[in-house]
Image (cartoon, rainbow, N blue to C red; front, side, top):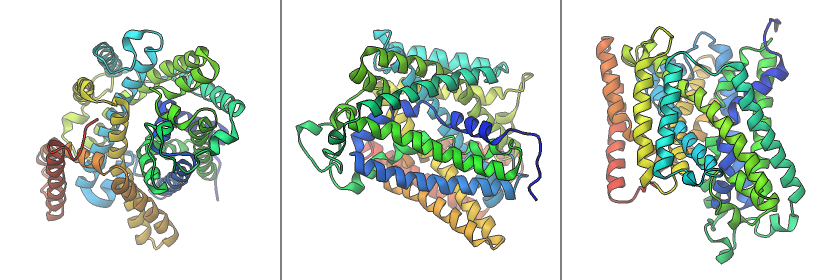
Amino acid sequence: MDTQKKGIGKGELIALIVSSCIGTGIFGITSDVAAAAAPGPALLAWLFVAFGFLMLVLSLNNLSNKRPDLQGGIFAYAGEGFGPLGEFISGWSYWLSAWLGNIAFATMLMSSIGTFIPTFKGGQNVPSIIVAIIFCWLLTILVNNGVESATFVNMIGTICKVVPLIIFIIIMFVCFKGGMFTADFWGKVASNATKGTTTGSVWTQMKGTLMTLIWVFIGIEGASVMAHRAKSRSEAEQASVISFILLVIIYVLISILPYGALTRAQLAGMGQPALGHVLEMTVGHWGAVLINVGLIISTIVSWLSWTMLPAETTMLVADDKAMPKAWGKVNSKNAPTTSLMITGVLQTIFLFSLLFTEKAYEFAYSLCAAAILFSYLFVGLYQMKLSSERKEWGQYTVGLLSALFMFACMFLAGWQEVLLVTISFIPGFCVYYAGCKENNHKFSKAELWTMGLILVLSVIAIVLVFNGTITIS
């Protein structure tokens, strides 16, 4: 019997989940999708990605119901199913993804400020990077002093995200022209009019969009955690699925409707944030101002929340003895200082490296998406393992489809980024070794083989970077 309890209602929970998932990615998705695909292949890509993430959401729902005792984040599933090394790989990847997402926040924020202050135009010059580093450390210091995103701050961020998006969708509906939308629906036309866009097979175009679409879904794993605040289990499951469907609708409308207002070449050639440039071309400068003001406020609010997330990740993994205790040690304000400082330094270094990267925002979010695929993969694998033990073959199929989707994304679209992520495990396994030594854990043969395989991949990645096969741009 589904007992009722005090908690958040279904409607409130849906709003909470949708708000937490919509980040800065949606403000730049239009140009990135248009550069890779025409409307037809883009819609097929959305169908593929939506199905894969639905399997992830269903897996998370099932695991949170069957194993409510595992409260250490999604990497706890990896630890339960595959031991300390599994938890470390998942947690390290999640930590890496979280702070790389902050790099994407930084570049998008400075690009938005560039609308009002030309010095920061493009968000990728020295002044932009210096200001971004200042923001990074201000937020790090705030979080280290126990300042987290309060309810009213999140509310402001939600309004600033959602209102401009609703206005954008309405304007795109009004400006939509069916003839323009269907002019090159499958992206087969190769001419000067489509310069800067990908032509070729439908499958090639679909693959080109995958990392962009994955980027906007990062955070969906939070739905399973927040769903436990619902009044009942049935409401939690309903809210999680309804929220996912609403997110898909919003994402598809934002990325697809502009094809009917501007040409694909125009969309692909726009700088970031793309939504501001689209409105500027369709309704005038006020459209760009509206989008960018909302984006600046919502980015800062999101950045504050995501400054705490990497530190919380390492803190939980350290509590499970898969990392050294220092990474989880908290100060008097209950903030993990060591982890915050390490993350801040790495973000600073990475921000300076963006001076040498042609498309900083796209590069940062591609690495972010590639890193989190490891964490999501472990969810599907543990769903398979748990369901197999309980002989729940329907749930086993859901986990299998989720895992296959993550594998497909790794190999079909993000293999270069995935290889680049493996390089991070060179210092990562040094951290893991220190944690194991501290906790008297001896490596098993399976762990040694796994670490050896990942290190071989990291060496291959370094070689491919130096010979130009993998380009950092």
